[in-house]
Amino acid sequence: ETHDELVRIVAEADKSQTKLRPVGSALSPNGLALNGEGMLSMALLDNVVHVDQAKRQVTCQAGIRISELVEAIRPHGLTLQNYASIREQQVGGFTQVGAHGTGASIPPVDETVVSMKLVTPGEGVVTLSRDEDGSAFRLAKCGLGALGVLSEVTLQCVPAYRLVERTFVVPRSQLLAKDGKLHASLLNQYMHVRYMWIPFTDTVVVVGLNPEEEKETTATDSSSSSSSNSSMPMEERLVPLKHLLLRQPGARAADVDGRSFADLRDALLRRDPLNPEWVRKVNAAEAAFWARNEGVRRGWSDELLGFDCGGEQWVVEIAFPC
Image (tube, rainbow, N blue to C red):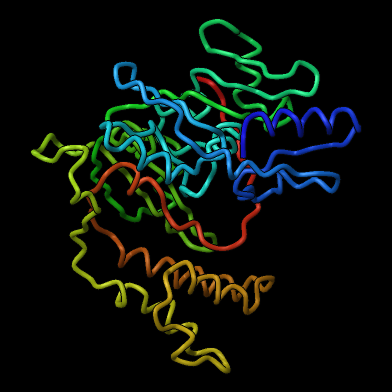
């Protein structure tokens, strides 16, 4: 619960030669924090320490969740520069694994770290900053919890901003054309852009987001929820997935009622996940869903940059400095 308690636990683990892994929200698909000898939850070290509005920086403890941090800095007219797909991460894990969002000019979140405190077995509490500690800081800001336990971090924020999100589908063959024109155009056109190719189909879902034009809305406006202009109700968009599930032996209406897109897709895949022909049918239904889901949404950046990944995943990702 306290920084002193964290220092004591790390020192005791060092003395007894016990391996210890810091755990955030345990969201890593690859089980980064799992360790049979010892795991250390940071969940109760979750306070905002200081907000510097002049520098647009926030200092917080590593256990605070992204969703909580965002709400804490919202009244100051600030937000994080980028977000991963979900907001349940703790800041420690969010930065230490180099989480990222989308966009050719948007860096991984560890690039927004200004300074940090690490609790280490050999050196005690170590404070590192971008301006003073060079290579040691660059190693530690994305240290995967291997160089010490991150206890406190200062992040560079940006003024809160709204986005316009456009979702549409394009043929994979067109996106991968040798001239690369469509790909280059989309990267240049949108501040944030992500592609989701659906295997066994020629469908690529494109989600592009740009800042909304300046309006009378302020960063602390209570009417901050996102809005959409899609003309088709969600229940109709889900029809291809629902119909496929209801055609299966033993399926009931209760199996589809009230379920989200991700829930329906998972329920379908679980029926025969290793059968390529079945996966092909599920993916065709998913492609039909996305064709119906084209449209425009508007909202604050933290609301629109997240999305429902859905289901169990095995993730391999890497980012290169450019």
